[in-house]
Length: 270
Image 1 (cartoon, rainbow, N blue to C red):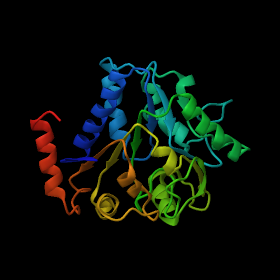
Image 2 (spheres, rainbow, N blue to C red):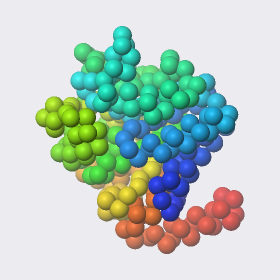
Image 3 (spheres, rainbow, N blue to C red):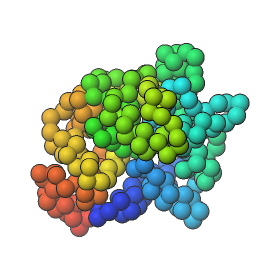
């Protein structure tokens, strides 16, 4: 695992975007796993700038981690629900780059057959050849996607009930300002499982902010546990890169070691 510390959110976002851009340049028809939430917005903004300078997404395929169940992309009206993750991705990234609509996959929160859809989503990932690079954030309780505390570390795409911490975080970030009550917001979601995520060829996790410093330390330096599903990164056998800002990294016991290792990698072009 390569842990990279950057001074602030902007620097973290820039570094993450450079990693994704390098993947796209090296394999123009790569498969990207994408995340929603406030953390990746800066990364997406930088990818948009890179696209304007020539970064080509025309052959890229994407799979999003999750979507609220009960809202989502209406195929007749297209990105109709203001609070859906489908609309988030359209507004924050897809409408600004030259990705083909048929190459975009987002869990269907409006499906009437969720179990059948979840199996279809797993099959589509395999059909695409698997995910080359999976972008991940981290919830306030250390979860990946909507794999809440207690979720199996071998889990696959499925419907998951949202934990209280997740409901509170998402209400404050997305629903409160829209005038939607906490009771009205979705309490379930379709999510890739931890087992699905760990099958990606490489992982890029980005986390910022002092309020996540404690859980970052537990994720990266504590025991692997289903109570902090992102701690499964310690089991990952592929190339994992974690990019943190200084605040998110502040509680790491081995912080100085990570900084030294990064300087050594740079010095020796590793």
